Image (tube, rainbow, N blue to C red):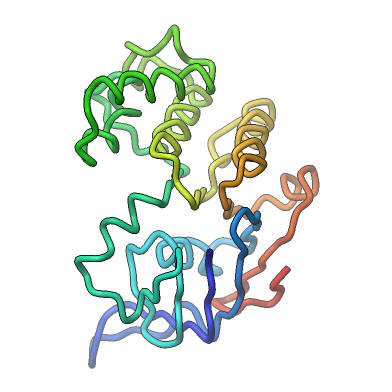
Length: 223
């Protein structure tokens, strides 16, 4: 599902290139696996998640995601791969002018799915996150925990093979964080590969699992 060999990443190119943000990163995650991605702020977690999300390409080394070598893949091949990857952000990134239903439906509409199928799939996802009765509400009318559940439903409505979550509990209280982890755990049990980035060691202690740890751009523990 995921394989990195001696991956290095820096921003910029040529004489404007900065120092390496990630250095000699090597690890793999099997299909259906789960990994915590830990490390302090500035360790490089978000940069690594952007690589896995296919928002960036490595400057050196090998990155294979969903069976495709990202460093050598043609640019036109990447959108189809991205449709197989769900992303949950710390700041939710919901569209404020859209209802919860339409936020969840957005990736399906972008993919050109029939409207009848969209209604069925979005309805199922909203039932799963227990927000059916709030489908017509906009993000500002929802609590932080409810917004996060909408973001999760949007990330998984397309049945992704890989789910990435970047500090997903950062804006949630303990009860909401527990609920979120139960949802992610259920997805993982159903076969979705899950990678969760966090700097919250207490959260990892409450939900033990294989962990990758970054420090200053280096992988110091590969789980």
